[in-house]
Length: 396
Image: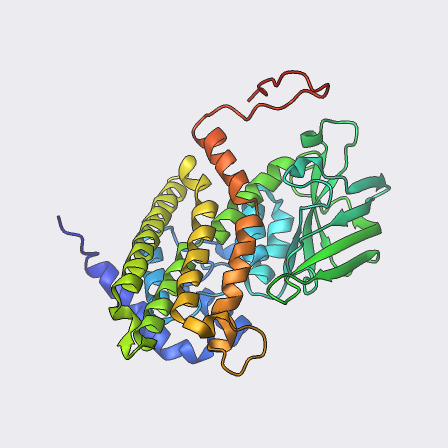
């Protein structure tokens, strides 16, 4: 069996290497780097040109080569955030032509920062029970309510937000998906400091916030359908195999540098065994990513293959960070402003932040329920009747 990529793809690999060697000094300039990547087709590669993308046909091997070379060179593959990774594909699938032309290109270029208004204090894992209301008033909706755990809200220009516009309909049918400016009067953002020591999440309060009715995606009452399209892309972002591959390379370099009693950690059989186990899982995750790319290129539903991405990715990233913390030894427990921190405490931050991601975006337990019920067709967990009678099986 010949597993070589072939002359065409090896020439493309050299093209990518030459680009990185020539331009890597620009990687620290975020928006400039993003625009450069887009111009050469290394970011927004398959986004249509009319919406600001490169317009290339899907090619799984070229996508894999780009990821491999950028990871090997340890340079960023461009901006990955809620706007680019979640909203853009949602608009491509369900947005109007006006919405696509207005929002996609500036979002891809990093000119607009987005946040996601989904979770609420009283809804927990039952997102469909959200209570933020949008009442019709002329050409506008007037929004009142609260969101929580809103990433990037303190810096966001825009929000894509779930609100209840049809209070008389069943909970899943009464939700709409609105996009509007975070500078709209009546919006208050309060930061939430997490165990990382940073305010990466926020509470967002809406008081008589007026949003034009035209800024709705896919129509009134279609919000649950649109939200699930966005969640599909969110879970893919949180389980990005390229990120795991880059972290693995960082850990290999760390273990080649760190020593115990004069011995490199990479030569210690216990640490090396842990590294190899994680390396195998990273490779499995990357090949799984190719499976998903193949399904996407063929416009097929990958089914259970898509459902496992978030669970697999978040847990793996946390375990990679745990190995790095252990490799740092006593320095690994330092945090804050200690003068002995390595790499500004990056691994300590990742370890705690990734633990949060196992909860955020749908907890690991919720993900397992989704996999079992939607992917494997297993029955739902029995629920107690309201009168505390014997438990009955909920209909699928």
